[in-house]
Length: 108
Image 1 (cartoon, one colour):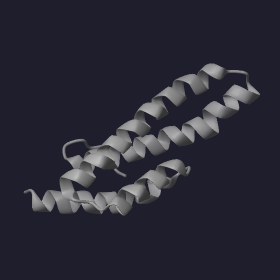
Image 2: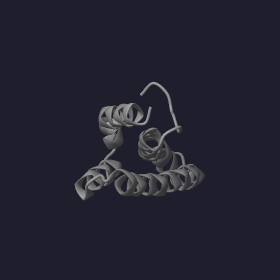
Image 3: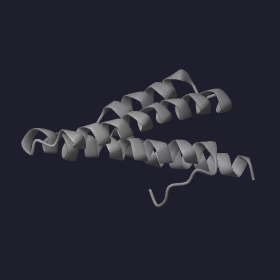
């Protein structure tokens, strides 16, 4: 991913997916060790809250894309499953980027 963009619905979904995935990785591999190894529970409170917000935003953006562009239920499930796997949303980035390019071509 080269940059975060929010100017189209598909770019917004792609950016939110990236941010949600990044927050999940930080939560698991930075905040959790800080909580349990350095006794810093506020790291999980802060990162977990941010991740929760981004997770809900991703779900909402996915639903809007499904409704607005007629994406199938399986497409939304794929994004949902990817958001539960560490680094999962990063693997979707290329596909979401191609989808954004098609959206831009169709709406230019």
